[in-house]
Length: 232
Length: 104
Image (cartoon, rainbow over all chains, first blue to last red; front, side, top):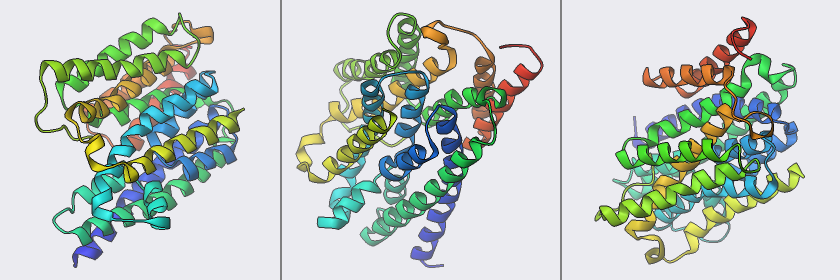
């Protein structure tokens, strides 16, 4: 099988896995109080899973617009670094650059990084993974959002427990270094302390941003010569 | 109000993606910036999972079936279960815990 066909097959496989995950996003978004069209707008326009789950989580917990937007944006900031990595490989301008930006997510960048032996292969991997996931993630969201309405009370089905489980599963592959595990522990501790004291949404921002402090302290203590990879 | 949040957050996330294609290469390529950026998702996901597991009405900390669900998710991840299975196992545990009247 040629490189190109192998890459296209892998992209579809990742997309199929993402579809199942899109179903859970659609269902959880509606359970948190969004309309199906709002869940669909997030998958179509925001198109970055962790930020979408975060936004839904903050809204569901009664957080305000600013806290919700800030949380989604901080989680989405890593995409800027993916874009930064992809820019010299893709060399896109005009409309294609706008489209490439939209497709710049964990999976498309990760697949491209896996094929950097050839620029052509890296580009094929980026675009095919981006498009496959866009279509299947949105299809999954539609099924989940419409299906959730049929379920009734979300707590009866344990959907409120599925949300923190999703965050844990998203965080899991990023815990490979000790500094990452310390960051997680500090954030969890701060979140638990701040939750009874501050308005909904603020504890997440405060605890989440503690990662910046931990990262800077660690950088002072042990300066990284080779930059750590942003991908999990 | 939810629409404002949805569209505002979507625009913010898109602008961040686009910025990576337009800023000059030397601006972001600093070890401290890369270090912090790798940790920000960990901090936010940890904060979110903590709050979503124990926050009750008005911010009071509560232990209910969500904790049982999260514990199951942790075991599933340790057993290298795929994403969807982790979520389903957590939801099923919480639903079962409630159905049996073990936890609220």
